[in-house]
Amino acid sequence: MNLVTGSSTKGFAKKSFRRISIWVRTGSICCSNLPWRFSLVLTMLLALIMASSVQAWQTPPGSGTPESETPLTLAELGLTELVTRDSERLAVWLEAQVEADPKTLTAAHFEVLKSVVAKHISTADEKADVRLYFTMGQLAYQLGLAQDALEFFNEAAQATSDPSMEAQLAFWRGQVYVDIGVLDQATKAYMETLTFPDIAAEIRLETLLSLGTVARMLQDFDRAIGYYAEARALAEAQALDEPLARVFLGLASVYRYQGDQPLALSVYLEGLEQALKLNDPHLLAMFYNNLGNVHKDLENYTEALAYFDEALELSQRLGLTYGVGINHINQAVVFYLQGDYQKSLEKYRDAETLILAMDRPYEQRLLYEGFAYVYDAIGDYQKAYESLVKFNELNQALFAREIQVASEEIQTRYETLLKDSELALQSARLEQQRQRLFQAIVLILICLVVIAALIAFARYRQRQYSSLYERNKELVLADARHRKARASFDRPPQSATADDEGSQGEATDPLSGVYERLLNVFETRRSFTNPNLTLDDVAALVSSNRTYVSQAISAHADMGFKEFINRYRINEARRLLHVDGRAWSVQGLADEVGYGSRASFYRAFDRYIGMSPARYIETAKQEQRQRGK
Image 1 (cartoon, rainbow, N blue to C red):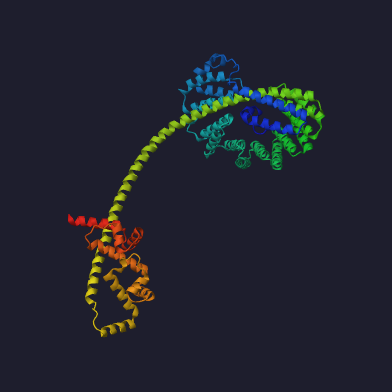
Image 2 (tube, helix red, strand yellow):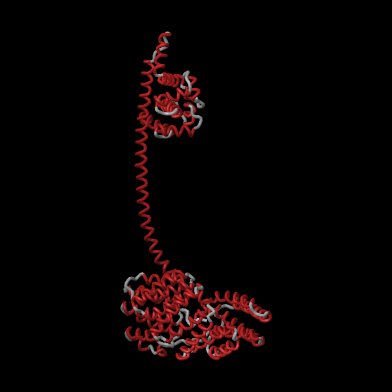
């Protein structure tokens, strides 16, 4: 068992549900390695624990007899004069209570103090208010009044304009959240502390240590190592020796949780050197104890016993009864693992005298569990059974207690989060109103801009379409003039001599003759309107072959056969739209000029004309309406 791993054993109730599952797993593992008779007894006792657990769950939290608290008066607290005097004296008195050890105040006292402080807050200046709020928050934290602590820290944060104080308040809020188990809020508060650039190095270091501890509790080991590394660099740079030793304790514990015992051992040894320089017996006892545990994990039992001896000697010299008892238990475990059951039994008996004299049910449970294993190993099954019965009784009591504490903490956590949510909701509502107003203005402006842009674009496109339509109209007229001129210059067939001369011309440039016949056939017969027209069909029409026809089109029109056909068809469609008085539909126009597919007609028309046929027809109608006006 660790003497120090960064948290006190007083916090065991905060991990109740996790420990329940650990108990079950531990029982199953232990039973697999024990004689069948002892395994049977242990299994039955674990079944009793589970049955008691169900009963504990059915018992409402707080149903036990509460401690009687008699209402206190100001005179009984010695505060009668403080009410009428200045806030300075009250603040000094409260700070003395914060530093007092052991605490003499209770929750009932604190309720009286709240009324006293409220009277001073109403007349005090800002610094005095912040001082009172801050000190009351610290006192509430020490008394375990998490909700009160958060309220006073939040009041202080609202009253102060000092960044250094704001940083301290954020740190203390993190401490409260850790204490009640709200680790995400604790991380948020600690991170807020680090946002203040001019905070003292000590506060920054303590914040990094706390962030490392929270990350370790969340089993985010990589982040924990990062925080501890940053804390180490800061401690070394600022020559903060005592916090540096605590950095080694935290960092090594992370490596041990990860199962990297050699690395944990190396860091513990480095921290031990730091503790030796400080000559701090408390730190030395912590390092010796943890080094003993690491060597125990590595099965270096001789080294483990040596370190436990060192920790035991320091604890005895410092009068740390709890530390002495824990080291006896640790040594008993090592002797048991070595198979020296008699020495293990002696150590457990040494620990028994000390542990039973303290209100330490968790450690007492470990003690009786150890007795059960040792007595079973030496064959004294009666005492093993008796130890297990006591172990079971403590388990039941602890389980019921932890369930109650866990329920109370859940309630406290809920109330804390609810209070934070209410404050956040108020500020969020104000922010939402501002955001909505801003968004409405922006949305209106965007709509106006979009509408204006659409109108401008529509006008621009309409001008483009009108211009394109006029240009195509001119091309239709030019094409009509060209056809008329061509028809007037064409010579009708005359005599054989003329045919011979034509044949001689074709012999000189046969492709020109083929191309001329092709144009004549297309313009007079409109052969291109046949949707199934092929190159062989055209060759037959001009009394040539497909090779000559293809070469003639390529040489004189600089395009392929398909494009040549498409151009004729689209030109014809454009001509029909201008010279024919019919109200053409897109499908009807496509069929008229030789397209079997509406989609093919759309693609070709848009490619050669620059707009879709539907748009062209609509533009033509608009032009006609404008001319009619």
